[in-house]
Image (cartoon, rainbow, N blue to C red):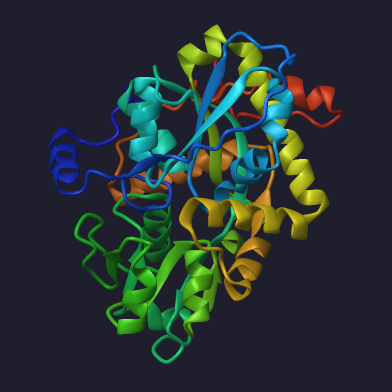
Length: 368
């Protein structure tokens, strides 16, 4: 494969000038905020190799491992006297920038910004060290205008952002229907309308879009406004699983503080176990965390169906990340990347082995 080049020189200049949030996880705005979540650390707790580990994630249900793990103190328990400092982000590029600058050490993030961040830095900034979630993405439509797949042709379908994970998925699906769309303009047999997830429900209510290919909880918010689910993206993948959230770490932090990385991974594995053992309690915990971050909890008619569509797991589903990269290349949004070395799953597999769980695979994209 060729050297790591995420976009051609002209395309990246044009695209980043017009859309500085290219290739985000969920397509919200670029702001990052310190959620100021201060966890209790016992005075006699033993510190690891740093006083503090800085983590980042989105205030979003597909990042519930981080939401719940922080909310319930499950990460702090594994870190002992090393305090956890959490920051929240609304877009992949700002989180990657924070990782590159050292503002965070470890982050929960989607596949597209993971790929873009890795390739733009020529493979020198991050590693994916675990999975976190699968699924939670749907094509929801106005049932008065779209009653079947063939009715999507000629309609206006929203995605969160040009080149983000859901945008690439929609463009690939459109291509598989035999329809043509110019990826960058969104014009063609289907009008792909890049719309911030925060305003997509209003766009739907106003009739300016006919549907949307979006992550949860946006999809369920639209359904609460009268939309119907035409397609669950999970149905397009083998075993109905595809990566929606990864855990990444800066390569320098991984090298210098492997004990801290391992502790965070233990916290993640145990949080996912906790979530899957009692989904209702975990859902309530995630919603409480969202309420603290945003000032408003999700109503039951939104969070209940949204939660059911997300699978929380430790496997990064590496083969699906490689496929998502291929879809972006096919759409013309990404030059063929060299993703070898994007994964380092040795710390995770060490944790899984200690927990009596099976090891996970990097699909040939791990460090040598």
